[in-house]
Picture 1 (cartoon, rainbow, N blue to C red):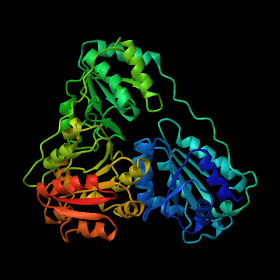
Picture 2: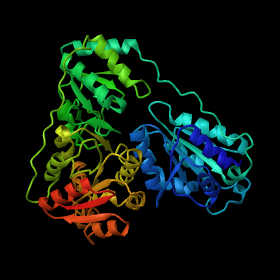
Picture 3: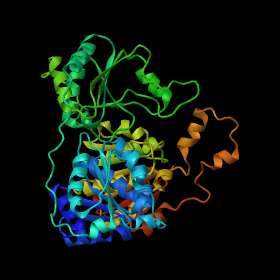
Picture 4: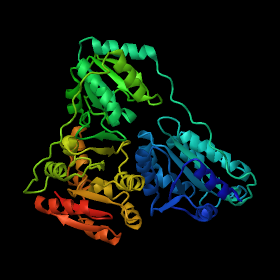
Length: 515
């Protein structure tokens, strides 16, 4: 077999089942091997941002890596923004990036670039394979690197001649997994002492701490000590809804975040970093915790967060402590004009059980998170790195990972335009994704930030750079052209009917909600 086939067989041996791809000439032997060897689902995307964003969504729900297939340095560069988001979400991903044949690079052909230099800021592991005999073992090392807790980005660069040359040793066996870093018992004792102190305290949790079982342990800790349960503004995945322990996210606006945290005297970090503002603002602090608040790191991202919460629970003697969960409480269906709050109430009324919500609604959908805390159990995925354009691709990958669950993508109109091509992949794959476009015809968040940063005398030229209505975007026309059923809602009665119908239909759909 050649190197490409050894690579594919190594991926299969390691449990890699999906390859999100946008290939080019250098990758044709790998493409042929994917065809020749059964077992890996190949998902074509029309742009690399969709490839990497879909791999992010898949990893968040499957808890294992998909492969991406990208064409040389420019192809990788097109996908880097969503690799940034994936890295912030601790999503395990294996990038396979094609490269010119080793002997061809010296000729500086038009697509030649320093792929390793492009990959390193957005990857935790980078390697260029130099011989077909080594390709399979390199792939095994890459997958092992991607699975280092809590999840990492690995980039394997594949020269064309390495792919087509003979690989007589065949595929490589899986490497032993990397264990979580051990817990620090002194950190558990310090956190327990802080929570017993009687002072105002909170747990700030992210990552696997936000899974339902681990939240239940956090609920016992909160009930025993009075501590508040918080999460960062952006998280890779939260299991929430009725029957689960609720957690409050730190708001994005600095003033709201400062107000939420103003009385804290102790903050216990569970996989999270101490909270800071998303951006710097004149005369406002970067650090969001009040002066004098003591920060205690119970466990870092590479440690077993569930085990850390269990140890803290037991140190507090709270193993049998009763705790509260969110009740099931549907909202009445709203009528009247479309607003962000009204859409949130409609979702609370109509959300099916076990849905996956992908949230890139930015401004207009901010009330959805709080409103849906009493909706049926669901998962909430967010834009983690702030590089907009992850929503539609992430929903695509989540639907590939969980075909039996309805995926709902809450999408801002400006952000949706970054990787609109994901709709085509949803149609091609027949994915059960309902996309709600919050159409306010503007980069509304930037209008608010213009005032927040104190920019003065903003006139028509500045405001025009935040307007999306000259010309207005035909969302239904765009969706239909990519094979996705679409409708336009100008009142809540229209939205309610369209959303309810989409929950019963197979395949993707888009609802343009005109605000």
